[in-house]
Image (tube, rainbow, N blue to C red; front, side, top):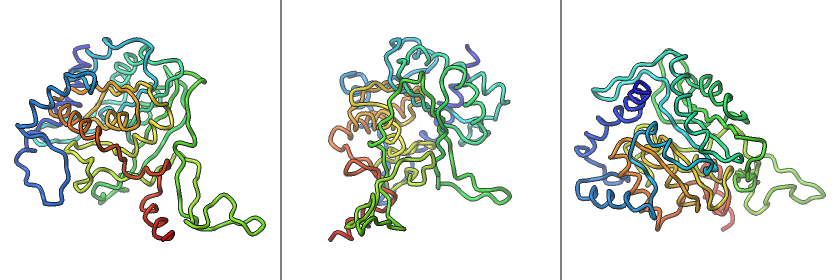
Length: 328
């Protein structure tokens, strides 16, 4: 267990310390909307974290905190664990481990989550092409495998002797065959390229706006990775987009359901859960990221908008403005 915790600390907490230490010295461009925490904010958001009526972000080690949570209460597990990568973060360097060691590490925390879930719960675990086989292997021990979502992550430099790594995967499992999937809540509004008519009338598309509400697939190309001009952006190096979490939460939970995130980072799962009227428990070992999560949660009390989600549908990238312009 000590080795497992040390691995978690290195991969989840230590890799971000250098990034956060340098955050205060960064000078921001005038249009930079990146959320940050300064010394004046810290005490306020520590108090915010302590008020469990407003916030259920736990600062601590997932291996220590998961066994303290109530059994059989969670409707959704979303996990964005450290990927099995060799990568440097300033002075910190983390070496890729063997496939078998990574499988053992995944199993060590997934097994702690299993008793916390309802029989009707859904599970989503993030990974990349290196870690996908391990995630499928471990997840299939405890859950029923439903699908693998691949989403396009445009951010990043191109490779010189390989294909650019521009996609990540999310493995979708359920605890049983009885689970929630709200299809209408996650339809995508897309521009009609080849309009089809029946008896002279549009078939399954809106003639005025030239769009169609389509069934969601497991290939997501309409997601923007948070960047400096987006109001949800933080300095977290692996922050997931709010739109991505909104799709998962709306599909696999109902209002008032309880969501678990054992690797909370800067709090995207918690923030989207709050905006969409769900409850949450999020665990994060790094204090600075907990404070960022608290700040974002406080902001969500007055701003419940999610980029790309409007009028009850997910808009294909940039298509909402296009449709609005055509209706004028």
